[in-house]
Image (cartoon, rainbow, N blue to C red; front, side, top):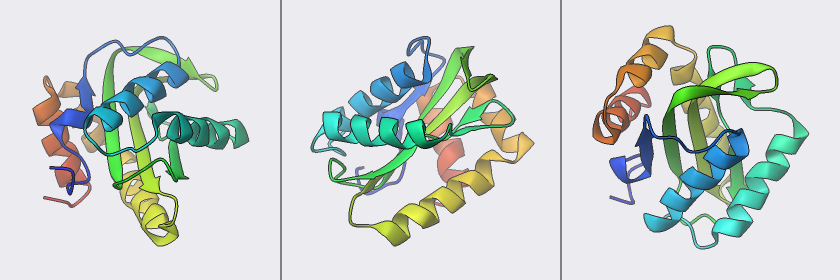
Length: 150
């Protein structure tokens, strides 16, 4: 499964991952590590948080898109969380988090993945479907279809 961009092992549907975006990032990074997609969770989290420090990745519509190219990443992946209650980030309420992880040496893959995911998450219908997903399997399937990987 690690050859897929997203699968149910790196998706959290309606589970509390904490009260901050950093908590969500750490929770999703732990899932990426468990799925064998990271070699070093601490390096990856530090790289994502450094990127967040440059400017929030909160987007209109209740979405956050934290991301990083990192030497701690083994396989390009998108970990996803639909939260049971919104968190506040940069003055916006966020209830969908799409964490992009790309190996440090894959600049083109990184930019392409950012474009692909951003194109999907700006669509109100896609966001609504993700919010309505009642399981990690359904959310992973919706995301993969939305990203054009299925």
